[in-house]
Amino acid sequence: MSEFWAQRRVVVTGGAGFLGAQVTAKLRLLGCKHVFVPRSRDYDLRRLSDIQRMLDTARPDVIIHLAAVVGGIGGNMANPGKYFYDNIIMGVQLMEQSRLAGVQKFVAIGTICSYPKFTPVPFKEEDLWNGYPEETNAPYGLAKKMLIVQAQAYRQQYGFNAINLLPVNLYGPRDNFDPDTSHVIPALIKKCVDAVRAGAPEIVCWGDGSATREFIYVEDAAEGIVRGAEHYDGADPVNIGSGMEISIKDLAHMIAAFTGFAGRITWDTTKPNGQPRRCLDTTKAEKLFGFKAATPFEEGLRRTIGWYQEMLSAS
Image 1: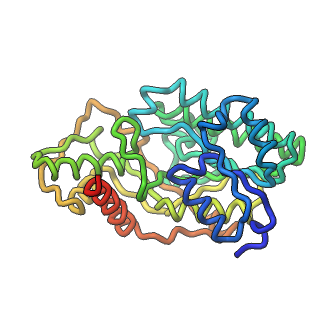
Image 2 (image 1 turned 45 degrees about the vertical axis):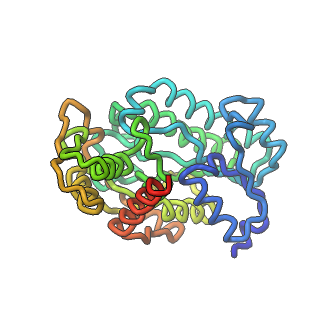
Image 3 (image 1 turned 120 degrees about the vertical axis):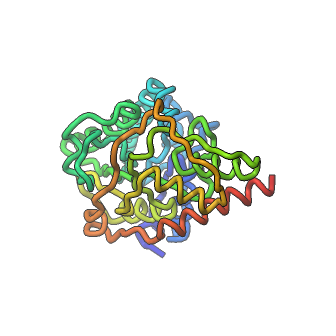
């Protein structure tokens, strides 16, 4: 239980989503009695009037802004304009209206895609502005990155307490397994499980497998966000990650082994790899608000695969 959360009204945008559901669950466990989740069917957060109506209804002390329009490499390449506009218009208007409404704290959830394409590994928060993001997801990454600028400008001019947390790639049960918009872990799990069920001899993966990624289990990411929201009040963005790094090729072979797929893994090198490497320096989160990811990667991966297999069996 937390006295901080027990005394506050909280809005979690995107609170019914993959990460948001975990964040709202943690808030309630900590004793937060007033958690408001604006559903998109009731509040289109791209519309100024809907934002104002949501704020009038919920009267929040704290906003945790998780809502985003997001996808993997394929989704980003197919929707660069939509991903840019929807994300920037939601965030910019929501932060401004929150300031005008007297919200005490605004927690903007950014993205690892905001980092420059060739950021030295491990990514340190100070390197955010040392280059342009990887091209396939730059519009999305830059749209979210502008909330860092807005938050720092509002803190400087208005004394508005807005913070930015930057989670690395998420995974876990209830992830998005739609092949058109999913990220790499659910995409590979689906390919392998579907191939096992169909008796297919081969799966085809994008790129050459050399790119590396860091992943954080969704429950761990939620824990980091809730801790940061409660304990951190600084101007600088903070990474939320696990500190691990794995190549996509090794990841594909690990998922194949865990799902029982024994066929060929073929790499389609006409498709992009995305950012060459991703791995975060997570020391600030541990130092500033005591967060360290707890779930070992193989354990989290087995849980995710198990959930997907059970979902298929039940359908």
